[in-house]
Length: 146
Image (cartoon, rainbow, N blue to C red; front, side, top):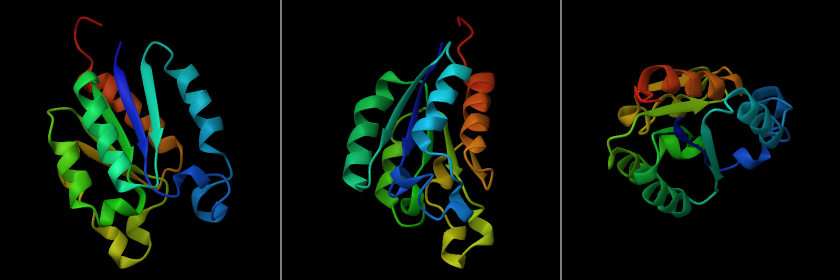
């Protein structure tokens, strides 16, 4: 069994409501329930905040007792060196997820500080990107005793 943190940054609490043509119409809570069922043998710990400091505090508290991180840093991907620093403070695999294809949007979205510290990045697959990230982490980083 793996303990995987799923972390969403600013405005992702509005998934399903905010710009549905970009982010889709399914709420994250609805999606998360399905994700829990799909990966019921693993512990998925979810946290969302619009505050950079709260995200960093959560990471510092939970990473030491977790096996991996899936993070959608939202706009903090493009601005937060502090968030990237918090993620790289521990030797734990990280996958960055973005609902939209950040490379097909405004030019400033093409750079992510988080990508530099992540094992991989998934962009443009909508909510399915989280499932791909969790599957990748389980398949590639699960301890052999599981």
